[in-house]
Length: 486
Ligand SMILES: Cc1cc2nc3c(=O)[nH]c(=O)nc-3n(C[C@H](O)[C@H](O)[C@H](O)COP(=O)(O)O)c2cc1C
Ligand code: SF4
Image (tube, rainbow, N blue to C red; front, side):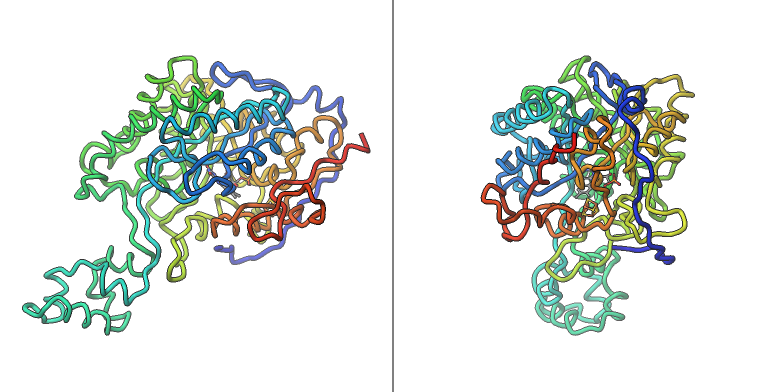
């Protein structure tokens, strides 16, 4: 992963945890309404893909165990990982793309209700993503994948030569020469793996996204409602389709790109389709970016405009992330796919303990505060969810008191210690296992390996009841909180 030049080492520490009577009157542990949904407290576990599903995209027992473990900590809400809305093979990504998934999803809802004793509300994040290929072996790229064009022939002076000869000639060139002969997209496909963009409107499947996506999202949301989820989060963040529509890099000329209004058009039409299908009382919100953190990307002003438009349309909550784009991702090795959390934008999405003078904690707090202010100034009370490097009660409470957000997201901190919420609420904060922001978990995610935390995944492996990862060396869920000290 990209690292800031300064490389200052930070260590998470909490000098003082609150007593039970302090949390009892705190904002963090006070209820809040999100649309028609009542959260018991203003804590929220944002979506995190743990790679617990299978090739069929089903809810496995591992998926159930994973979320039930989070639910034992009784946060206000959990958002289930990015879940695919298209009925196509997507590796072990969870899917909600057909009614056959409803039974499994119902079991997940029941497990969370049971484990949290009804205290935690469960939402699910709905995702669409465009085709992306692995970085090709150059020999195979020139032999099979590259489409030979008149431009290639002309550059090589092989206008009438058989195609095989052109391919061979290209394969024999140095990188420097190739870069001058291949188009920018062909060069990118060779270096990173081919990847569809929302701007590829010559590709009929991409051109038709404004027609195909609203019904796909709507059908997925109806399934979520049928399965018993308390709400859905439309994934408009990071490197995926809807975020790419919002991006300032979206130059589509069909009314769905260019200006801020045109870029927000499909996200709003998707929302309208979802709302029309699930009815006015079901909780629907979205996650989008306070800043893309890429050259020529959308920044905070665009995010304020989007937030106002989403609030005006009637979204029940707005959850803000940051960065996480393909545009600045590191080059993958041959045979691997680009991963959108390896560049600077990826760092801003999941900042790590090696950081700059700003440090890894709360980097999204001020941008989100600005977005919240713009939503309030436009006359909307829509709850705003913030996230990014938040691990202590004081941090969370201060940002709520200062009205910088309405709900606080704890992603990696909840992964490090799913009991954070109960420990802190009951005055046992000193027992919290603090996230180190090492991004060991994120490294596993990058390899599509079952995500675990280095703070607990080697604990009590000799216990026969412990379920191990496929590598046989890590436990899949955090050990239970030993409550002897309560
Ligand atoms: C393993 C892992 C998987 C993630 N998967 C998702 C995801 O599916 N959807 C999403 O919006 N964000 C995802 N994120 C980003 C988190 O939701 C969160 O925004 C980010 O980790 C910053 O918050 P934190 O500092 O509290 O961890 C993921 C993060 C991690 C560590
Ligand atoms: S592995 Fe654990 S300690 Fe490291 S960043 Fe992830 S959650 Fe935090």
